[in-house]
Amino acid sequence: MDGLDRIANVTREVGRSDADELTVDAGVALSEMLRTTLGPNGRDKMLVGDGTVVLTNDGGSIVDRMDIESPAANLISDVARAQNGELGDGSTAAIALAGGLLDEAGDLLDDGIHPTTVVGGYREAARRAGAALDDVAWTAGDDETLRSVAATTITGRWDDARTASLADLTVRAFRASRDRGRGRLDDVTIHGFAGGATTDSELLDGLVIDTDASSTSLSEVAASVPRHVEDARVAVVDDELTIQSPDSVSRYTVEEVEDLERARTFEDEEYRRFVEMLTALDVDVLFCQKAVDDRLRARLAHEGVLVFERTRQDEIHKLERTTGATPVMRLDALDAAAVGRADEVERIDLGDGSFVIVREASSSQVSVVLRGGTDHVVDETERIVVDALTLLDAVGDRPTLVAGGGAAEVALAGDLRAHGRGIDDREALAVDAFADALETIPVALARNAGLDPIDTLLDLRARHAEGESRAGIDGDGGVIADVADRGVVEPALLKRRVVANATDAATLLLRIDGIIETESSDGGVGEHDHDDGAPAGGGVRADTGGYPWAIGH
Image (cartoon, rainbow, N blue to C red; front, side, top):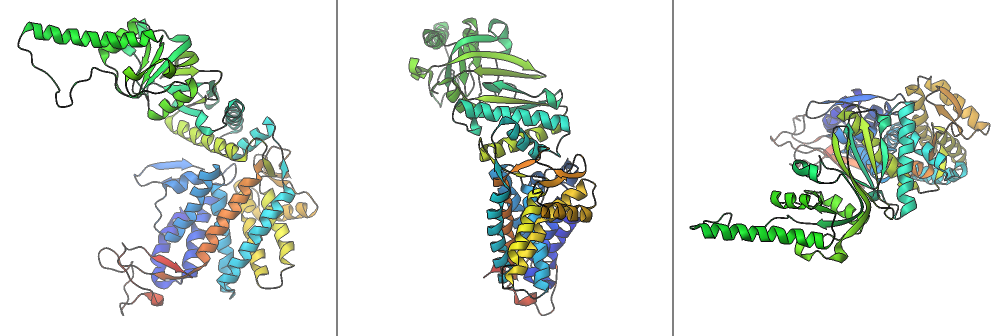
């Protein structure tokens, strides 16, 4: 991959490059590599550290797996992580824009424009772009609009059928958690397993626990335990259920038969007491974070109590929210107030997996069960759904939208060029350069959609000049159209954060004054030896593991 090669080479250029050239080159190299992932036909593959070949078109996933040595490129990659963590989408666009800004800045620096002037112009352009977004945005909040937002996020990762299916599934999960209560993503549980088609994925009402992955059910006594319990009383124990013994004694020795009988009697009494405590409170289902003694499980199964052990801590918290049960550290502390309830608890088998579903009408908890042909498909699908849910959660029920397909970027670029004509100093050049950088996104979309990038950009500019502010690239049809009518829309908040994050990264790198060349751990300096023993450009050597570091104003 050319982009990776360039990033790897950037670190070796310290001895013969000034600070501006070094930092600009690192950002542009990373940006060029990720631009191939933009759009419906974007694809890229990479070799990760353990030798595994990963095929993906998710820019955030690529950045997470990359082993980047250049501090400058690392800073740009942080843009993707911040963007993806905050909104779940836009990581590739943020890096592409940051790289475009650095590329344009390189030309300005070559023309003698001072970095401070470039930074000032970029800041003014970012401010103006944020204001201009309000002029091309509109507000909508129906489910069809939310499905379009989710589908735009998913587009390019799956085909049309699976994109539509996952978008609908995501919106239904989002709506269910919002309409019933707190509206937090914690109320949406996602499970995935290989087997079946992606379109077989479903939304289940309530909390779904994968007993194969997170806890162990009563497999050996399952015949005597019901698979479905209605109006269930639920207890949650945040500890191990067994007979307690002194920590320093793992076993005891008996000398007479009577001693053994007394020990057995004591254990029987303790087991009976545990069972009586639960049955006295009419407990139908017991969840335990740790192990449950085999004999106790058998006795509880005989009484018809459904027991699950080794339930994860996060699922304990979700059970508390779903059923109203209060986790107790010891079974002795369990009382009627700590027992919760559920409309029904059911054990089901999906594919090769075993699950328990806890349903309660008053709870906002819902679960998404994802299917896929292979584990890799399931993992990618889960990443897609999480990203889409994160974006929907960030924009809310009535998001402010802009047209996708590069339409918003072309509209902003046109506004910036008009705004730049009213600026009297050299910052106007940086404002125009910012506009050019914005248009690298529709250019990348056109290239990945099989269109001629230059002709497409000229056509987009002409249509926007005629007032078609929603004209963009329909990647599926390979044409320029009103993409908003075709459901290609994005939240204005997403565009705002892409511009802000990319601008912050680019301006931070442009403020770097010099490079401190550091000694490698073997005593050498980078990969270059200098006859006079001094670093190029008057830098200062320090033994910090062989990495070059930058210093700013």
